[in-house]
Image (cartoon, rainbow, N blue to C red; front, side):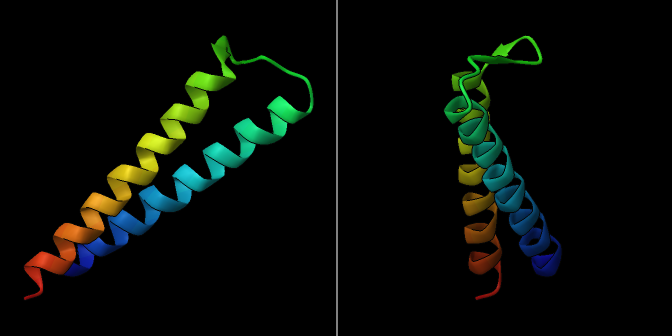
Length: 65
């Protein structure tokens, strides 16, 4: 269970980094929208993935003790 949570946390974290990076690159490129959503919303979704990944990794650490 601990290994599964750790992998899930890592995947969520990396997905969050990629979403935030994509939103940032598109915004610097001059776009305000992507796929019908504002880039601020997409950036916040990436940030939420990062936070969720951190909490899942923390839970994996807590189970391991």
